[in-house]
Length: 372
Image 1 (tube, rainbow, N blue to C red):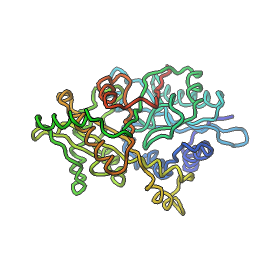
Image 2 (image 1 turned 30 degrees about the vertical axis):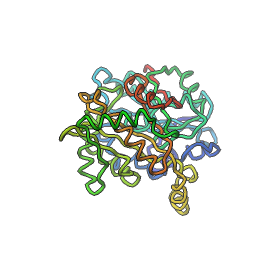
Image 3 (image 1 turned 135 degrees about the vertical axis):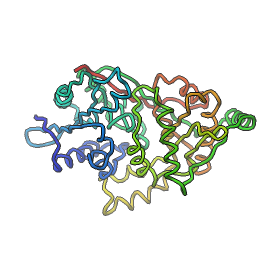
Image 4 (image 1 turned 120 degrees about the horizontal axis):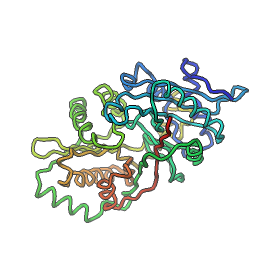
């Protein structure tokens, strides 16, 4: 077995294509569109690479069979946001057969690349940062992943821990909503709205880009103190907004204001993974687009991708009002179930709020560290 760089166009096509063979017998896996993965890895299309470098590697058997892949990532924005962790590097997009020697070789290649750049810790998986999907699924294998969340076999945890990785942080996914809005939440939200100056409104698609401009300011302020948080640049936010525009439901994006000041927002996305799971090739043509359009009708679930409130307004009830809004509008659109993810295991305020509404943890994702 050998590990080789996958930097050429042919190598990147192989790198992108490996999971479609690796997961072909896993009915829970939702194949991403290949063109979306290619955009993620493109140094010209993805503004992430304005402040980061990456090297991709493939593991091959002697007969040329690809048995694993990994990416090593140096993200300079992480060091600027967390000066005490300026020498932390990352790995991501890890996939491997159930063979420790394959995993060790891949981790070794990524570690060597990071070490050459003066980095002292390898953290991951990050695909490509905390602003993308990240973590290894360690609990909750019986249900499919929702949109923009990872999925992997149970043995990945053993591959990582046998290779010397230790837990850095758990990321929790909560589920709930099927029983309708709890009466106490509905009543509390009504009373709070009546006596407070908090007002809510939906996303205005007619002025989409001016709405995005307001989100840029809120997003980086609302999460700046979170573990692992990396502020998004204007270019990265615009890039994400372009990707999300076709799937956004306006009344499942809510803005909260107190007086004239915008103080919070939340985004709830329909779970398009329900449609993607039928398109095993990851290609839109010749039949992938037809399958996606047909299976969109089967979507009955959403994912609360983000909910943020400016620090000085976090004890005003803004979060409860936004959750009630999302819950009510999602049910009205035929989405009775929701996942709220991911939540840091240390974020007790958000966890308590979700648990008071009847949400429960049903999946756990883990981020690992290894000294270099």
